[in-house]
Length: 229
Image 1 (spheres, rainbow, N blue to C red):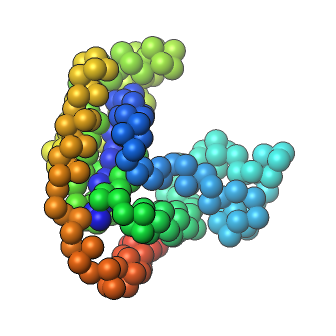
Image 2 (image 1 turned 180 degrees about the horizontal axis):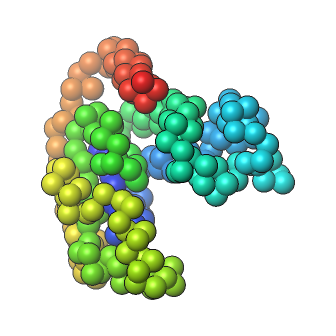
């Protein structure tokens, strides 16, 4: 089994691509969903966040107020590093649990949906392939304005907070161009799925089942060490 990293940009249409992949029966692990799960009340990460950031970042139901916490960490880099050191190991452990599950189930490849895959760069070395959901800048801007009801200046400001899609495109091994209509995007996803399914890259793991657990354990160690260093 091999790993495929999937990413995009704001309003590029990554959710559309993920929906098609799920429809095809692909194994997709959503890093955003896991990030919300690992900070639920009574979890280890929740307790550590509360300890370091105080009760003012909690909602009435005890859950983390993501807006309040976000306003703190985005303006204070040292707080952002602290938060990452708390949450990233827990996120990565859960991701690896799900990878192991799909390995046991016999999937040829697993897609890791990671919004900041190309920004952080830390995880790309563990991916056999990386996929970027791309759309041209005018289309991206128009879609964001329509979706969010923003003016042009505010929409451009939000887009500029991310690494430009053109730059991400240079790092990706596969690009799905979502600038056109849905059918065109769907055809590209089907072609990518066929290519990945036909790949023989999954064989190394199947030929070394005995070493798989140790290898994934080593991967976990490297990932945690990378994110807390």
